[in-house]
Image (cartoon, rainbow, N blue to C red; front, side, top):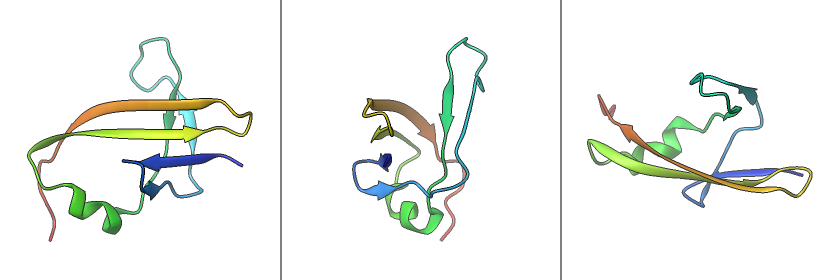
Length: 75
């Protein structure tokens, strides 16, 4: 069983999950989806660093961090 968590707390939805080189840097990118309502409380700044961690079905552990820009916060 694989696990993918945002900020160590919020699990990714089971589908869709895609892999592709979305930023054209020659490295595969894992695209996952999170429940928007559970993430809204996290988005309290104009920009913030988010971390995604997980374990793949083969036991491989991964961690990725990126900074996002919040353009419009929906209440």
